[in-house]
Amino acid sequence: MPKLAANLTLMFNEVPFLERFEAASKAGFKGVEYLFPYDFPKEQIAEQLHKCHLSQVLFDFPAGNWAAGDRGTAVDPKRTGEFQDGVGKALEYARALNCKLLTVLAGKAPAEVQADRAMQTLIENTRFAARKAAPLGITVLVEALNSRDMPGFFLLKTAQMKAVVDAVAEKNARMQYDVYHMQIMEGDLATTIKANYGMIGHIQIADNPGRNEPGTGEINYDFVLPFIDGLGYAGWVGCEYRPKGKTTDGLAWARKWLA
Image (cartoon, rainbow, N blue to C red; front, side, top):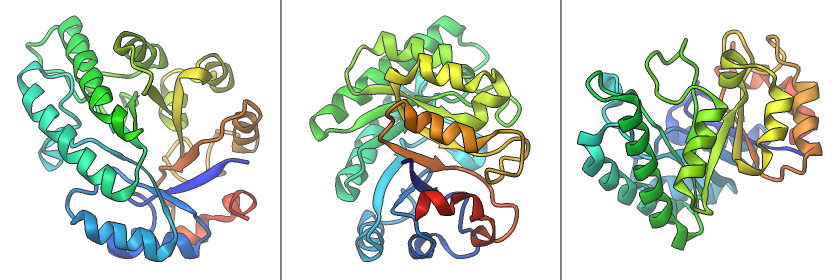
């Protein structure tokens, strides 16, 4: 049965970040994920995880100046040093939070950087991260996003993620498959997931359009979640969606999975 993890960047926004752990726990979640933990001391987050009996499932490597428009630095050859420094910071947090999944956000390639150079930079940075993470038992993921929500993002398709993971050639490098993003970019979800199942290290969900909770759009999660389960997927499924209203009011879809 799929294990659902609440994404605390998008869910339970009715309360401040450090209070979302308890809110997720009370709603029935056993795991949490989010974009970034770095605005808070790792000790404070660890305390919340322990108090609320939650597993820290995933977060992202530092992605540059998010407020200024950065969505990752891993494709920019001029920012390799910054990316590598961020790997060290992320691993410190991952160790403290017992987190075993970290995501590389490729970012947007600068206009002056050719696509093949950007791809090679992404491969080299992801390989660096994977090798640093391996002794800690951490898997490093790459994720494709959709071009509508994230214009200019470098990774947009499953095939691109696969190409990166193949080229990195490290056992702990895999892809993060976001059903919402890939429904927009390519559809054919079941076939694509099955074909790439062996390379998928984490799955995230939201409905389309709107990126709201399952059951509000076109994606048939009553099929998709059992299908993933039937493939033997034993990992977490990250609920990376924006609730239409109060988070707890929109959790009816998840009750059978949280029970």
